[in-house]
Image (cartoon, rainbow, N blue to C red):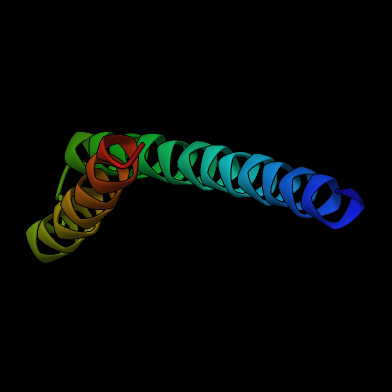
Length: 75
C-alpha cells in the first residue's frame, strides 16, 4: 500500500509541475506576443516604416499565437 500511495502522490506532483510549467510557458508566450504587437505599432508609426521588418514581426507574432492556441487547447 505504501508504494501505491507514494506512486500516486508522485504522479500528482508531476501533474502539478506540468501544469505549472504550462502556465509559465503560456505567460511567457503571451508577454512576447504583446511585445511584438508593441514593436509592430512602433515601427508603423515611423515616418519611413520598414515594411520588411513589420512583415517579419507579424510572422513571429503569428507563430507565437499558434503556439499559445496549441498550449491552450491541451488540457
